[in-house]
Image 1: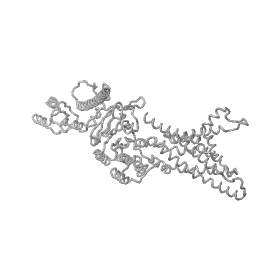
Image 2 (image 1 turned 120 degrees about the horizontal axis):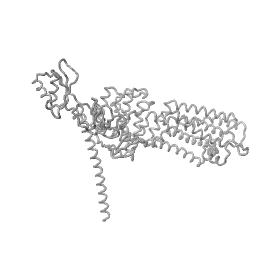
Image 3 (image 1 turned 30 degrees about the vertical axis):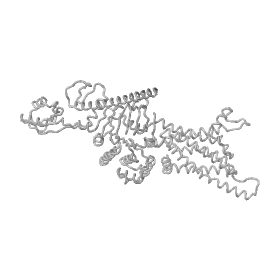
Image 4 (image 1 turned 90 degrees about the horizontal axis):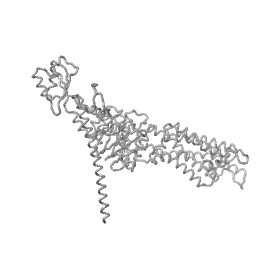
Length: 381
Length: 257
């Protein structure tokens, strides 16, 4: 549905978007993440035709946005970061204006009615936009993007400024939209991405560093590998036992105490569920286990690690203050899991992108070969 | 494009600017009309129209300052440029909205001539001269109205272009006043003085000839004689066209920057 190939956008000397390529199928909900200044808004502006790219192409349903902008823009509904509202109009007038602007051919009354129901702006329908609160203005902006039932809907931070109840409603709305439309969502709220999107694309410094299905990342993130345990017993003996126990790759004592129990954080090996064997081991040594809590990784950690890994200088200090050399071997620390996962994601993405580029080149070569063959046969005739 | 046209037209009357413009225009035009015709005891409207054009210097930027500056400030141009409307369509929609307000006010200000006509009728009834015409000459007035409309159209295009360059409405207004003042002022300076007295403001004949060709005023003369001068028509239309084109280019350039 949307095909972006080798998109480059320079603002003067500053390269905002550096050779981005991705393809989005019909009905997918894609989340676009990235730190500030990474190039998300620029990409969206180029996608919608507001800006032109320095190089590369954008195709919406096969129509190039630069060659045939009017046709392509009919298929797009866009909510920019700042909703483009005319303050001197009422909500009703504004939506009617948007309806006419997009040359919509549906039944106007019914269509606007439906949209207002969904976005819940019926009670402010006759009010001047100047007099609306931020949340309501945001909703009017969302309504404007939905007019005409466009095939592609692009939201730039849609839930900013909304109250918690509305945030959930808008997320449900986006999920429902995803069944018939293609949605691209840019946000900083990672739970939103997890809750709503099928696919996550992370952009950093103008390049795509991660392009994965959400379920893959979530599955990797929620594996039960890390626990905090509270064990009553002399820490001098408990800690070495934990460290040398089979199946545990990392153990560390934390500072909390609960009565005479110390708290430890342990991390088990991949694929091993350490809980039962730990219980039996501890009961053999008569050290009561009074607390066992699973620690998941959060998507935030992954995101931060991916961003750090792809934007870092060679030497970085990790959270403990130790200097970590990129790629250097180090004793297993708790942050290695995130690093591994992040690295896997980044490598997978790089691989898929390379394959895509190679496939394109092969196609071109094939076409050239076909052309050559055709011309040869023509010559022969 | 028609959606943009309607919206712009409506916004002229939701904000105070439309009413302010109409009020000032009608007041000034009737003051000038009274001063140049009835007070001077003449039916000739040529100086009325000349002074009216000079008043456009300040009036028309009032109309055009909002056209694009507000869009840039509120970032609503993002909505217009991502909608299935071409840039030319957007510029035309706004231009036609400003032109409509200008043209209808101009038409409405023709009630200024009713006193002249009624005085003319009274006078011709009273004096019973049948061999020459007493009262305002309709063909002159109509010709000059068309000329003024075309000049106004060109000046609106200039004002619109200037407003697309800046976010601030006030700068747009001031800069367009300056530009139009230069254009009109040049025309006036050109015609000051006379050859016989040797008091021409601009001595060099060549420069005067060039300014004459470019100036807005010089072509106005033919309209007042009731001649529908095609050369002048094309001049005004192409001036309008140039500035509309330049406005479209401003937006195009912003896309590519």
